[in-house]
Length: 132
Image (cartoon, rainbow, N blue to C red; front, side):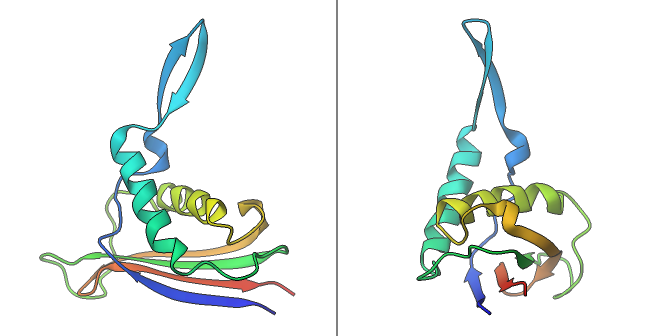
């Protein structure tokens, strides 16, 4: 059973996949990423590539992610209960993990545990475990 675990020290991006924009070209909607989402995507990909597995996951897996945001006036380890929403953060992260070949498709993620914290050491902790 494959298990991947790592921590990416960074200020996690707060813009999300949810912020996609739409324009109309020849009467059809065309979706695009605004510049801040493109920047967030590139930042995540850059950090994720340092942890890319030799072999991508081909079976069901569990994804555990702990988003650790710079604590500011909050206590270290205190849950973050403000935006962005965990589901929106996860969508961009999983898309980037697919681009980086962590798995064949993010549909393989059958179980997710996601938490947001204020932290003395900002970053994103990721653990992926293949399901049996």
